[in-house]
Image (cartoon, rainbow, N blue to C red; front, side):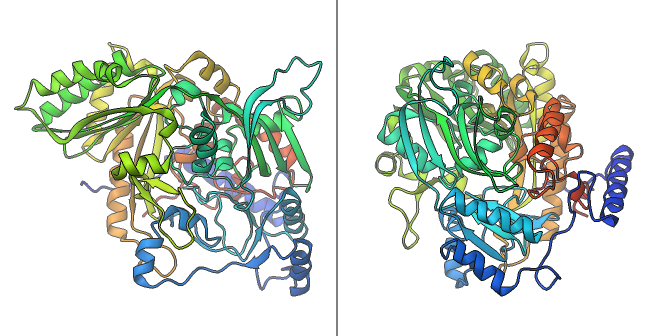
Amino acid sequence: MKTGVIKQPCAAVMRRRHLLGALAAACVARGRTAWGVGTSRVRPHMPGWPSPAEWAALRSKLGGRLAPVTIPKLAAAEADRLLTDPFYLSDQPGLTQVSGWVGAWRSSPSAYVVQAASAADVAAAVRFAAAHRLRLVVKGGGHSYLGGSNAPDSLLVWTKAMDAITLHDGFVPQGAGTGTGAAPVPAVSVGAGCLWLHAYDAVTSRAGRYVQGGGCTSVGVAGLVQGGGFGSFSKQFGLAAASLLEAEIVTADGATRVVNAAREPDLFWALKGGGGGTFGVVTRLTLRTHELPHMFGAVSWTIQAQSDAAYHALLARFVAFYADKLFNRHWGEQARARPDNRLVISMVFQGLDQTAAQAVWQDFVDFVRARPQDYSNHEPLRILAFPARYMWDEAALSKFAPDAISVDAQPGAKPRDYWWKGDGEQAGAIWYGYDSAWMPATLLRQDQQARLVDAWFAGSRHWGVAFHFNKGLAGAADAAIGASRDTAMNPDVLDAFALVIIAGDGPPAFAGQPAPDMQEARAEAAGIQAAMNAMRAVAPGTGSYLSECDYFTPGWQQASWGTHWARLQAVKRQYDPDGLFVVHHGVGSEVWSKDGFTRLA
């Protein structure tokens, strides 16, 4: 692994940063921001912090569902096991799914938590936070890499208990009934605390339908949809946000609103990719369900190249193979080029049986096997198809693919809860660096593939570079692209064949755990940046995925939303004019960034 100096912001970025800083300072002097937003929040021991009697009154109003937040004290052996269990982490109001980001944030408990059981509970918390000028954060699954559900001394709205799931044979959004031409569609309504594993269990394992959602089983439904959201089969079903039919949301004025394409359509649109924790607290979502494909399947293979030249040739052959055979609605997930000259293929498919899937891969398999002097199997090729209904069925997976999952074994764990073993590596981890960029489909043209391959190879000299094919919608079904176009996501996603992700992390660094290894963190951050620079050279100016971007992204507004930024600002001004909802890289939160472009020194 190579180390290097992390580049400082360019002069234009530095000027913009100082301009924002001066603007914020001037507004703070008046006690307001340019939007009339108070730029400070009351914290304990400051004048204005609620008195014990005021907290008690809120607790009474909530039926006792208010409590101080504490972090569990764990013995060393317990900590090693539980702090890497994503379901344990989701069960603790004082913890987050990752423990922080070096140089950016560390997981810190809120002062109090509202264990919301209804929209009325959420509304009471919102009104209380606004009246007392408290920092307010929202936690569903807690998977925000940027720390969206984390703020010390804050009031936490925890929606975990709001996890009801209701299936609809025919759903019509409110206000779109008789006389509007709206036809009932199959759908599922989920509470804001629902996790994707439980949604899949209800919709797919039990009802034989499909709902487009996240890959990690412990990801919250509400946060993923508000971030746009990708599933393994996005090339067929589009963004998770594209399936949103209706949402219930508590806005900054404490009002509970039901929004859809017919009722408050601008706010509804903003919830489809405009960012979680930004426009209000979503309490319920209704998502369209889809016909379940007959078969799902997976392909895994790790190929070791014996030389740099052979590795470059392997990457070139794979890119050509992808463009010719995999660039369509059937295929998703990823291929990763590692610095040790290994190509790691972890892909999934839908709508194909085993024979058809094997036929698709035959030419690429023949290329590798015909060159034993250049390539060997670090891990053998596996192609497996299975009935789609078993994709999230813990009993079936435990019987037929036990090596693929880790079953939750914590005391009191829900039956059938598990996580994919590959996803378990990030539970509790602290990020040293994480960045993404959409790769335009024009790079798959024959006259452009050499540029793409050179960049992929060059990036892999510094760090592992993964193409997540299901996180770009070019090549997707027309219906998926059409529905995804009507979301707040950066339109770059529509023309990208993949999202390239480059990331590195360290062991859990919650309070009481060892501090991060700063030498290792700096080295990894430098390698990640160098690898991303190589990829950006062939895709300059393309956006990043809001939920998986660099904490220090310069020009993050354009990177996350592109041409949709101005419309999102207008929605924010209308529904949260005093800036109650603040998250890093959130619409309306620009003036809160103390130093949005500072990197690890």
